[in-house]
Length: 299
Image 1: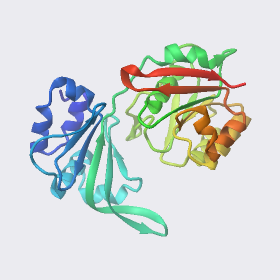
Image 2: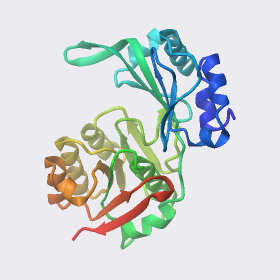
Image 3: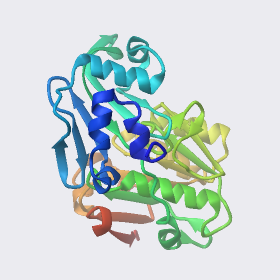
Image 4: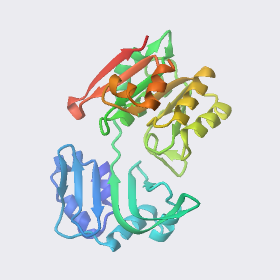
């Protein structure tokens, strides 16, 4: 079990919780998306059916510190001093989200103290979608600028990652040079300079900085043919994409939304749609085995 994504995450848990998690039925283990640890309450696991309690021992502050120390091979204090974005990426691409008391200086979070809860998200790469979808996003041998949108949890980032992989590895065309502006570290999940989630042989990843800055750096330094980014949320992101298109680069991006009408009601996305940057829009309906993919050609 240790080699499975679930097993990799269970290995960093305190002994009592590790035993409780190992007792879950195999089909439940395979479907767990997150393990949530909230001080004073029972641990829970989250899957497509919701959140359920695990074990019979409430989470303590010491348990939370043990998880961070096991995950990072460093003291919890050392970890918190360098966690400014509220999460820690693990080997294998898994991620620990951290809540507690923020220490703020000059308007910026510099550390966290008094940990109150952890959310351990299990990374499970999904491949094979690119080969069927990419031909619908290409025209004249070139990727058309594509926006993927869906509600939270519908698999936008997973699909984006597989499209990056397919383009980079030449799944439907000669391999392309991909650059990923991975602001939140969710596309490639970099760990010690290496992507923990496979994004292709011809892909360069810049993580940890805002998308606007990242796009500028990638354009100047990496000569990409395609730039991919996740979660468009502000006008600076839109301006960066317009800059990239002006340099002859194709785009892959994601956004939260239920429909085209939903996107057009929000100022940032309305500006994005009106800019005429995107030529393909991919809408995801449902999730898991019930997910459907709808592709629209933007006139």
